[in-house]
Length: 507
Image 1 (cartoon, helix red, strand yellow):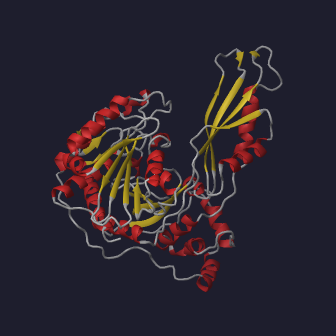
Image 2 (tube, rainbow, N blue to C red):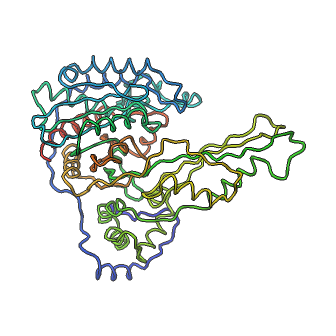
Image 3 (cartoon, rainbow, N blue to C red):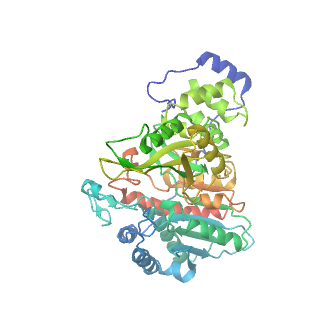
């Protein structure tokens, strides 16, 4: 089924007849890019044992709190010991290192390949999970750190984000070692400790370490992103596997107003809270301009032919457009897509006020007020560019601005037409079949792979979570309540990584 990607209630801004005639005259072939006729494979998995091991993994509360002093080292140490116990062949065969700075809790596994001259490949996942707010615990059908197996699901914080990927990788490796298999190229498994807070201690340090060890280029890097979900992308009801090929950056700024406090019975003309509130209001009104990222062009080159034919001229205009220029059709595309919060975020550096703090008592004027604003930058919008934008927008020297994040730039873009992408799409179809849409994707969130993709040695980083969800409701388990995955689908996750390792030999 095909649908136009539109937000509800937004009027069409184009004439279909006009678009079709212009498109027919000026656009190259816009036929489907979907891989056809891939034969499915069946991987025999010890599913009962694998489910038990993943259930045990969830019982280690490897939480990343925003307060980095609140760190449960016993949970990570216990989890590491459990992994060694659960996967004995992996730990006999692969070299394991525990790395990180200043706290070493990330895991680096090295599986030597038969041919050391081949560029290596890397699978990434993270050990840490987000906290479970106390006021949400009564909304869970199962205890969040119980690892319960019930009603055909494995439940618990981290089962979807992201321990199912760690264990899918290790289960597949354990199986292959028992079969006597050795990869042609060296494989690295990296399991970070602090992805949920940006990865400054774990993934960043390991990326630096591998670079210093002389790795010139990775043939393939895979990390988490969106799972396979029907209706995941706005307006596309089909089962969809979106492969991230680029990520936006990450910057958080603290805006602060420091002045004189006092008694609320004698307020000044402007309070510190009022001054800061005005600054935030002006900043939200000064949005960054829209532009079309090359990854978005690739995204619509793959998605466009699967959508409503009447509006393919819009998607084709984007797919075949030129950077630095914007045709009338592209401008109409931007205007329409700006009506949906998902597609809007793909087209500019976003501004999100996420924290506002001031005051301790109802009759006391606070001497200071602070706000935290999170930005997800497009390429070129560096922290310096963003800070300059904020200063000009608020135009108030009384407001101080400080970068409080482990800021990272937007990443490079992986090649969606290269052998790594094709091997990944082939593997997806071998496990889940051909009745789904596979497309490259511009990731508006982010993951730890940004620390690799920002470096010259990892140009081809692809992000996708190898698990099939039933619907978008299940996707709400990411950082939400009732995080869970289906038992039978977890078996396919293991099969996915097993087959992916086979297909990497053919790169």
